[in-house]
Length: 304
Image 1 (cartoon, one colour):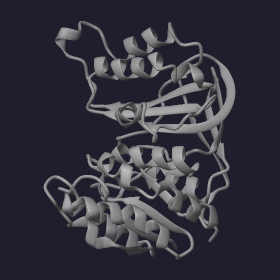
Image 2 (cartoon, rainbow, N blue to C red; image 1 turned 90 degrees about the vertical axis):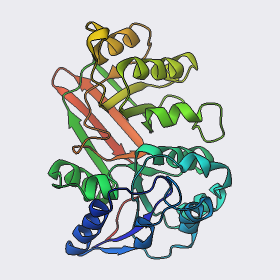
Image 3 (tube, rainbow, N blue to C red; image 1 turned 120 degrees about the horizontal axis):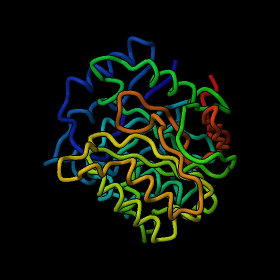
Image 4 (cartoon, rainbow, N blue to C red; image 1 turned 180 degrees about the vertical axis):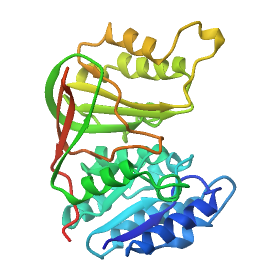
């Protein structure tokens, strides 16, 4: 069984019941869970003061237990406030010695991108405590893909994607679209060439999704990749004013401009059903009429 170390660098966990349920489920499965005090910690809308939340992140340097899984309680907002004070080099050095398996998504994307940009640290974009582990019902797909990613040196994610036929490879990176946009022009935006960029978001109208994708396009980031993979965009339903304009319109508009393949349909993001992706790892993407495969390798994984 594994050891889970909880951190809370972002928003206060308003759903305390879900977080406590998640902890109990992990313990019932035989896992050890530590640093649980962060669940109830609060300062304004954040999960503690700046110094408390920063200590969660910088304190990872001092964790010594092997095969530790680091998991944020939730996302929200707050990680961006910490970026200039995170000890990136110390964390990178610690990860080179004996990597922690750091997994999260949403607002946590800012820290994951910073780790990749500043220290080439691989992390996992996947479940968090309250929303996923503490969900009213555990999603079998999500749980299976989480452990598949963390327990194997190489794994493959398969789905029926939409987009042109392609076979390409590169560094897998990305995460939450809004958080990536917030990092453009900062030291915490990875400078990845010929990578496979995966993106997702929540509660963004299709025109906002398009606007953010266009910012990545106009900044030259999209066409510097070998492929773009889009996950779920929860809460993006159009309204009457859109008159037929929706996410599919966005994708078609973007494909007309891109010189690299854009593949959609991946179960990845703020849905109960989501895959876990090793950001910073090597990936091989193949898309054909028979389906889509993303094979990932080179990431840390559980040895026991």
